[in-house]
Image (cartoon, rainbow, N blue to C red; front, side):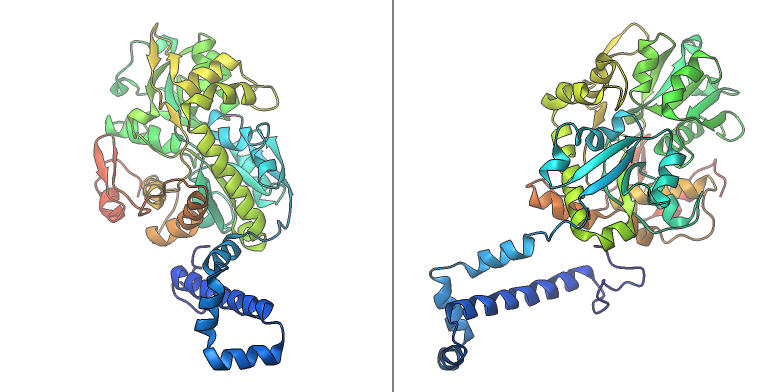
Length: 440
């Protein structure tokens, strides 16, 4: 786990997690060596005499000739303990961003890792948040900004929350009503009404960023309202909104139903941006560490499977039914494969329209925090790095990924480009100050 708020590890004796882990490993290895020597020399008097004569090092070296103590220590240290709670409830919103969380049930990833998990379709993000806070859900599919907002007390009473895995990157779009085919330039959008799924969402921040770069103030020049994703197409059809920056499959469903067109994919704003995530309370991760480990491993395993293009059609068939996305398979396939109709008479081929990558870059968290600050959702000074590292559990994700043989970045911070503008996570305040349109 990450260090606690005062910088100490969980035992309180070390200032860094690495030092704590090293001490624990050394202690467990010494215990294992002692146990092996006792097993080989069971008589206490003979054992003491032998050790006095040749020493512990020589004894261990002799035993290692026929038995690898190092291998035994590695196995002992890596072996998880008993799962404390096997039956879990996991909330999700029926969107393709939740693909790994959803498909892990029908495709058996939870069972593979010793869990009996039930994924529960939920009406909207506020309901996901409230059921999670009330402990009706053990863990949940959340928008990647939500664990940060919950931890900071933005929109709800503060509770320490964690985000150990990103579910998807990219996978959103700005969809406009067909009546706006002649308004492809966002400078023409003054007075239009847009929907996003939640205030604390990448959708909200990316839409705001996009229109602000066009010189529009998202709070005064356009209207932005929160609408649950399953209701977005109906609102577009009813002319209640002019467009939305929303998750799939609803961008594609608007095209399928003939009521909208895809103006721009979110990857064209920030290629590789985070969207949704797997999240749980810090109490769940701390109180049920083996359950948390097994659940995170199931999610990372499913995410790795979903990242492979050859699996996408199988996944589409698994998650399209009514108890999951409740969408035509062809709509889900178009999203997951990246070969899709855009509503303007064209067939586009964008294989990474949506992708799945579990590593929770802490630099992503810093960017999100700058936008929460930019639009007045959080007030006062923020220690961006501390908050990012407390919530986005890169260390936990990296451990699981290594166990599974997946590549792990050398650092959890990186510079990215958002609409051609560099974001350096080491300079969040300078980045925030560089915007002409902002609330803070």
